[in-house]
Image (tube, rainbow over all chains, first blue to last red; front, side, top):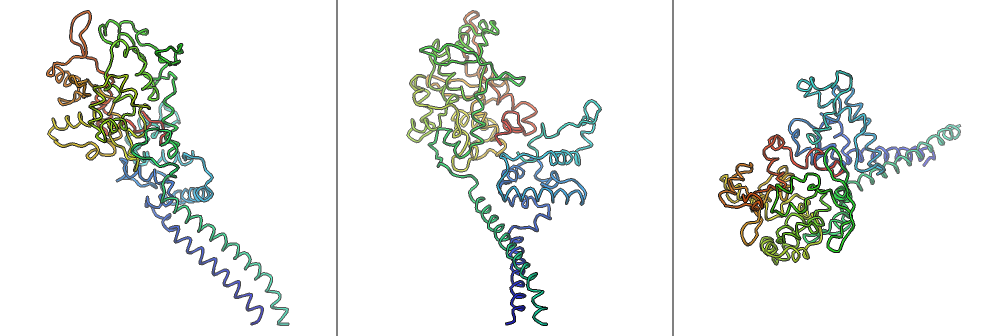
Length: 149
Length: 333
């Protein structure tokens, strides 16, 4: 065989192998599920088991899924948040380097508070800004268990 | 000429092959990592130790559940806050009472209580309540035990009695309960080692919540029967959310010792409200003591938190003792 042909074949096989491994890993890790709103997608990682179990017993189990509270409305904002969180979660869960018990980040906490108001704005607008300033009450300070215990 | 042309392509192609090789290795490493995580999910917690239905010591449970055990240990805190708490009053330990720190005396804070409770042991010694960690020590060494010897029934709520009851009853929880009720307190005290512990509310296999106290089992069943629901078994029939209050309701209740057998009974068949409980006691002809100054039959409601909760907005809204962060720390999650 011509040396050039051999090289091309080796490279072709290597690239093909990479594509195959990447494809298999994507399917094995249920990569496509992250494009959906299914709560089971969030529970692909077993560190979320407690939250998933808590949600399935919570008062909001029939009216809200994970993304309803943990991603902002609007496709651009929603997928940006999914991308940021997805990347951070992947790194954390692969390396195992994160403090426990896990705690929500300020960015995600703000998104969650916004999620409450997306549905409940009408009923709380009168009490939401005590003192008339910009500061808003934290819903989950008192209503901590409505999402997941 | 053909050779030079091919030699020009060889190096970049080899570089690509190298990169592809590295990427393949990285891809497989990721795949294997994901596989390992999925395998970890099969065992939701690392079984450092085996926990059985005989494991009383919460420190052993704590080896499997360190976060929960840490939260459990926090009941030793004695700091007065606007939500409650107690002061840590130092005292000199003695032969009969080895405690070096106690909560402050309510009788000293409000001396009228001595008149209110004249003729009752509470007029001798009554202190601010403090955390679960102290429940057994405080019951053992309170002066009330000295002035008014108590039956072993008291340990039903102030110690981890689930395993001791089963042992005393040769496997029968209720028989053990009945036997301990009829022992004098100092004798019964020898059979217990811990204040309330994990095993008193949690199934050791599944960690599911369960009611272990005969007092609650029998009295709640009687309440349900009076409401028309016979054969109520709380461990079978209660919902998970109800259990998050019922496990606390095993002890945070009004009670009395019925009859010469000193059986622990919660006065609930007529209902959980004060008037209904009073009606029950009137019918039973029971009073806690006779007032030393007036001669009247008296009743004292001990820590009726379960009864008052049942009448309020939280019970109506389905909020349990353990919900939000009212009575459990966020850490316990």
